[in-house]
Image 1 (cartoon, rainbow, N blue to C red):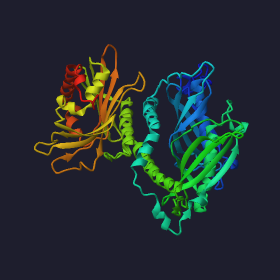
Image 2: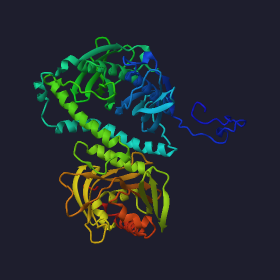
Image 3: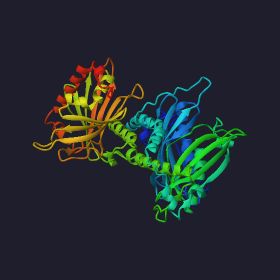
Image 4: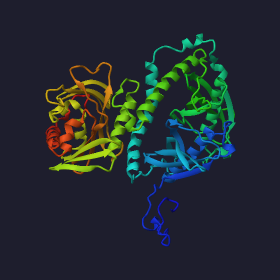
Length: 579
C-alpha cells in the first residue's frame, strides 16, 4: 500500500498467483494501525500493561488518524466511556486500529479498537473499543473546515450514521448528569457514618505534580491528551490502592472532556480521591489542573474511573466501605451513586449488541436520552444493511426481507411527491397514522418526554380471529438530518411504563426496532423506507405479504402516499407538540 492507504498499481505477484495481483484491496485512507509488544517497562506491579500506557498509545494512534484526515495538527477534545474487558500481560502484543468515522465542521469522531495477541498460542481477543473527538487546530487562515468522510463499506456507513447520534449524546452529557443529580433523593450517605469498619475517604486522597517536558508534548508544544490521562490514571490507582490495600484493576473510565490545553513548562497538579465504594467496585474522582509561575490554576480535566480488585481466579473481591468527608465528601458520595446509575444505563442500553437488548426496557426520566439514542441507533444500523432481498413489488411499492441470526426483518420502500420535511412532520405524530394504516385502531399520547421523544399507547387488531386486540407502549424518537446528506429518522421501540402495565383487556405486544427513514430527493420528491424487526407481536401482520399470499403492504403504503399528498399543505393546523 502507498502511504495514503491506496493500493499501488505496481504491487503485483504474477509468479506467485497472489490475489493482490488480480484485485485492489480497499483500505480506509484515515486508518492508522499501531502494534506494540508489552515490555516490563510498560507493565505495572502485577506484570500487566499499565492502563495509563495503553491510554497514551490509544491517544497517539487516534491523533495520527485525525491528522491524516485533517491535514493539520489536531488536539483531543473528549473521549467517550471506555470499558476495559481484559488485561494485557508482559510479552503479549497490543494491536490498535484507529480511523475517522465522521467529520463535522472542525471536529471529527475517531473510532479506536484495541485487541491483544498472544504470539505463542496465536490467540486474539478484544480489549476495548473507544470513540474520541479531535478538533483541528486553527491555522493562520483561520478556523479549519474539515472535508467530509465518504463511507465506502457497510460498516463505515453504519459508523458514519451512528457518529451523529454519539455526537448528540456528548453535547447533552453534562445536562443528563445534572438532571439525574437534581432528581436524586436527598440522602447524602449518612448511613455510612455508622459503619465502624468504614475507611475514611481522607485516607485515599492523593495529590501529585508533574512538569510538562518536551517528550510529553506534540509538535505544537501542547501536552498529549493521552499523557494527561496516563498521569490521571496513576494517581487514581494510588488512591484506589489506599482503600483496599491491594492492587486494583481499572475497569472503566467515564466520558470526559478536556476543558483547556496544557503546554510545555506547565506544572500539572493531579488530585484523586475515592468517592464511593460499592460492593465489588469503587469510583475514584481525578482532577487535573495546570499553572505556570504564579498564575492561577487552570482546570484541564476531571475524570471518574472505576476500579475492581481481582482474586486469584480473576473474580472481583468485596471492598471495604468508605466513610465520606463532611459536606463535599457527602456530595461526591451521592454523585457517585448517580454516575453508577448512568454507567449501567449506558452499558446495558447503549453498549449491548442489538441481539442482547431486551424487547422492552423500563423508561424513566433518568434514562430517557439513552433509550432515545438506542432507539435511533438501532434503526440506523438496520437501515445500513446492504443484503436486503426484494420479495415483492407492486406499482413502485417494494417489499424487502432480511434473514440473519434467526431474526427476520422487512423493509417497505416507496416514493412520494411531497417534500421530505413535510413527510417527516406528518409521519412523526403517530396519532395521525390511523388515517392511513388500518393496523393502528387507537393511538393515545402518553407523554412528551422530550422535544424529540414521545411515548404512545397503540392498539392494533387481534392476531387471531376472535382473540384479544394487542397494545404496544412505544417510544417514538425523531431526528432531523445532521448534515445535508442525512435522512430524517422516526424510530420506534417498546418501553415499559409502571403506569401502563399489561392488562387482561389486551395482549401486550412488543417492538424491538421499527421506523421510517426519509430521504430528500430532487424536486420535492421523497423516498420513504419503513423498517421493522419482526418480533412475535408484529410478524403475524406481515407474514402473508412476506410469503407472497397477499399484497396488503401495497394497500397500506398507497394509502400512506395519498395521506401525505392530501395533507402536505395542512401543517399549520398540526398540534404544537407535533410541529
